[in-house]
Structures are given as C-alpha cells and as structure tokens.
Amino acid sequence: MSAAATWVEVRQQVLEFLEQRIYPAESVLQGADKAASERKLTELVKEAKAAGLWALGHPKDIGGQGMPFLDYVYINEVIGRSEYAQRVFGTYSLQDSIMLKQYASPQQQEQYLRPLVAGEICPSFAMTEPALSSSDPTQLQTSAVLEDGVWRINGHKWFTTGADIAAYTTIMCRTEPDASDHKAFSMILVPTDAAGYEIVRDTPLLGLNSGHFEVKYHDIRVPEHHLLGGRGEGFVIAQRRLGPGRIFHCMRWLGQAQRAFDLMCERLHNRSAFGSSLADKQLMQQHVFDSLAEIQACRQLTLHAARCIDSGDAARVEIGAIKVVGARMLHNVVDRAIQVYGAAGLTDDTPLSRMYRHAREARIYDGPDEVHIQSVARQVLKRYREGGQGWDFGTRDAEWAGNA
Image (cartoon, rainbow, N blue to C red; front, side):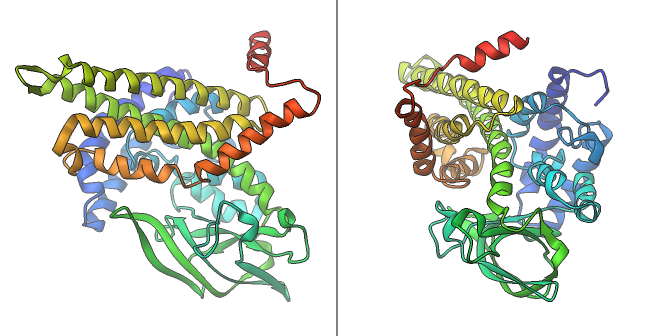
C-alpha cells in the first residue's frame, strides 16, 4: 500500500487480488490435502506482501501499515468474501495484536506480538467450555493457581479457533476464587507446545471440520510473567478484544453476503424456466429486493457502530445490535441464493453450502442472539427508567457533523 493510496484504492486492489488469486485457489485451500493447502496459502501470502496488501489494519509501531480503523473497516468488508482471505492478507491476527499491544509486557510483545504481525506465528484464544452455558462466562471453571512463581492451569475448553496452527493460546481462567464474578478471571499466554496442552479434536460443525478445536489442560505450568495484563482483568481484556472484533465479524459477514448476492443475481440471468429467464420471475425478484435491502441496512448499522468505536465510545448497544442483525442478514441472503440455485446450491460446486453453514454458526459464537437482544433492550430501557431521556437516534450524527 503506497502512502498516498486512499482506502477506496486499496479496497479495489484487495478485491482484485481476491477475484484473481484467492477465488481460483479456494478448491485447493479447502481440499483434503493439507500440505498442498499450506503451500498454496504460503504462496498467496508472499504475493499479498509483495503487492503491499499485508497487515493493513495493524498499527505501524508493531509492524503493520497503520490504516485508520474506519478506513480498514471498509477493507475488511472485502476480505470477508473468502474465508481464507484473513490469513492471506495478515488480518487473522488483528484482534490479538490489538489486545497484545494494549496489555502485553515488553517481553510478551517481543515474543508474540511482532512475530504475529509479521505472519511468522498464529494466535488462538480460549474462553468457551463444553460443560457450561458460555453465554454466562462467570461460570467458567478452567483454573490457574500461582505457586512459587509458576501458574498451574487445569481445565477443558473448546472452540479454540486455530489451536492446531497457533504458537500460543490466550486462556481465560479463574485465578481469583474469592473475588466477585467479574474480577475472578485473568488471561494467561500459554505456548501450545507446553506439556499438558492436549488437542482432543477438530470439532465438526454441521458436517465440516471447522478449525475450532477442543483442548484439555492437564496441569500446564508456565512462568508467572505469562499473565496478560493484571490479575482479575480477564473480563476487561475480553470485552475490549471483542468490541472491535465484532465490528470485523460483521463487516466480513457483509462481504460474504455480497458475494452470495452476486452469485444469486448471476444465476438468475443464466438460468431459465417455463420459457423465460429466472430474472423475469417476480418471486425471484423478491429475493433480490429483500437481500439488497437487508445488506444495505445492516451495512449502515455496522458502519455507524464502527464510527462510535472510532470516536472512543464503547458502543455496547450498537455492537450488540449488529451482532444479531448481521448474523441474521447473512443467513437470510445465503439462504435465498441457495434457493435460486436449486439443487446446485446444496452441493459444494459453489461456495454457498459452506457459507450457509458458517452463517448459522454466526448466530451463536461471540454470544448467542438471545444474550445480545436482552443486553441491548436492557440498556435502552434503562435510559427511559433513569431520567426519561430516552434513546436519541441522531445525537452522535450531530456530533460527527459538527466535527466534520
């Protein structure tokens, strides 16, 4: 990326790279031959770096290209079109690099952060546990006990994404058993080659090997300085990691939905039934209208939430809303595209079947819909209960207009 390039130009470069280099390679990248998949991925990463498209959103002082948050949001929308693009463009690690930049010690940054941004290592993050309702993380039971300067960790996690390729896992565990629920947990950085770190399985999701691993910790021992941030700060770190992360998720979902929309519209023109193009059928036109409206509405909600984050607001209501609306939008759009494709949409001859399964996952990971709905409603209703100010939909817009 040249210093003078605008986000519009970079977005177009990323889109062209996707269409010309990543799309044609997807059959290899998702194939059963893992060695061939990794070779192709390595090849694409080298090409992305040579094109100046690597680590666009990472801050410059840790080795990234320093694209401003709001500019990068638009790039992430394009990256979302392929499930492999995050690793190709070096954005797979962005949530973790933001977290480490803010909370890691100088020693931790040297060991993990700089190699992470350079693409030399991959991260993983462990929070969810199989035996508990993870929509209430205060129930988490994985524990870490400090003895003679060493953390001893025992527990059982799953949905640890990328544990098989990660150099380390950031583990959320109970370290302060006598503290209140939200101060009882800490984050500890654990190398995946540590003794006692057992990968049980790649958890199959809706018929796919998902890359979300079940892992057990058998008396893992790591030095005290592997603590990330302070003791009892696990919830604070998790929330500050998840806020921008949900923006990134939603923008990638928009990219997936836009790709599905493209496929649907092309299919409508390329197929005919009962003497005319499918594009002439009114029920098919309804699919186009509904998908267009949902994508654009969700896009505006997501960009609004991103502006709130960029202005320093925690944006809890906005982020909770887009998490639900975005996941539903993606599911609906992909579902309509499959309907238009008919039997072919159920096969793996198009990206739609994988996209559909990932869309269904989106309504559960990073918090199920029900939790976000309840949280958003409570926060809004609290405004009316306390002082009767209500919810002003235009307040932030007026502030931004004044700063323009």
